Amino acid sequence: MLSWLAILALILFTLYLLDRAWKTAAIWRFLRQPAPPPPQIWPALSLVQPVTRGPNDLRAVLSIRAQNPYPGPFEQILVFDAQDAASQAVCAAVMAQFPAWQPKIVRVDTPGGMAMKPVKQLAGLREASAPLLCFIDDDILLRPVTLASLVAHLQPGVGAVFGLACYTNWRNLWSGLMSAFVNANALLNYIPLTFLSDPYTITGHLYAFRRADFEAIGGLNGMEARLDDDHELARRVMRAGLRNRQTPALYDVDNQLDRRAFFDQMKRWFIFPRECMLPGIPPRVALLTYATSLPNLLPGLTLLLAPFHPLAAAALAACLLVFYLGYFWGERRWLKHSAPAWVWPLLLWVALIQPLHALALLFAPATVRWRGQQIRIKAGGQYEIQS
Image 1 (cartoon, rainbow, N blue to C red):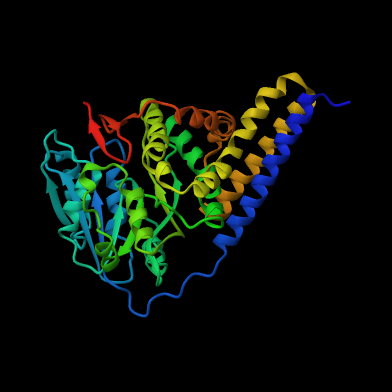
Image 2 (image 1 turned 60 degrees about the vertical axis):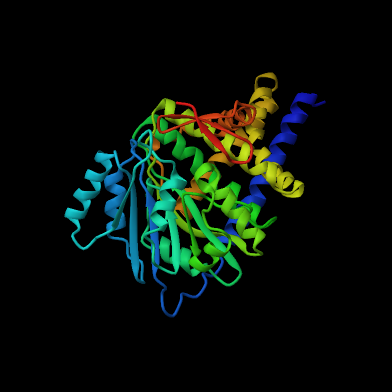
């Protein structure tokens, strides 16, 4: 007769398999949907790009943007901290390399020398003139069709559109671990939820609005004192009776991390939603969010049982097989990007330990570090810079 440990391990594996099966089917259906017809005349687009000094490869990011083939009129606005001479020098070098690229340059002078992202976005907006507005982070490597895909999905009734991240930095252990974590989870966490509920937040890496809709919902008014600009924008879109739309527009993220930056970023990613997003969403939607996220814990729970029964060890091996197959299918079939072979062992950490780490972070103090600043997050999205 099977012991209760073996039965529990088999139940955990079965639940994990069923979860991965329906999520895989949802991804397949979502990413095989026909693309919306392109506009007969592509509208002009303003790309607002806050830049904050950091370890990321800004030259590579700007070089790609200097050559981006958006099919309509296109202006780019770069917003720097006034004291950030190094980033401005990189921009000047790229402009010299690509003389046809002439972005508008905005400098923000802030006490302490480093403005938060919403402050830079507001400064950039004052220079934007196009009927479409797009906001992008400074570690995003645009694929050639990304902006056109976003714009095509701005259909009637849609307020905001955003895309899907593929992390591509494998230059060191911690950057590779973050890339593996995101690429293993992004498709599975974001896309299936769209079949259960309209998106209640937007991904702040890259998103776009019609200017008329953006201004009608209040834009970034009042965002200077908030850190949850992407969550708050999504709430404003829904209050206006419009929809936030997850699109299949893929973009690459070149996120350079050392050990401390890795753990700082993981903490931000779970503290921000806990403090700024989850308290304001309907209970049904919160329940769906937890229900679609908690199955990530199942391989780690199976690991705890594996030493005590051979069938539990077999269930663990089966969970890992399902995880690895799903990871490689997602990378090769949809993300169109493959991790180097040295990353494969790191996927054990991603499958077994990081979900437990993420769960622990939901109970961590509401203080985070962002590019050298210690920040205390207040309930509702307000913040206080402590150092």
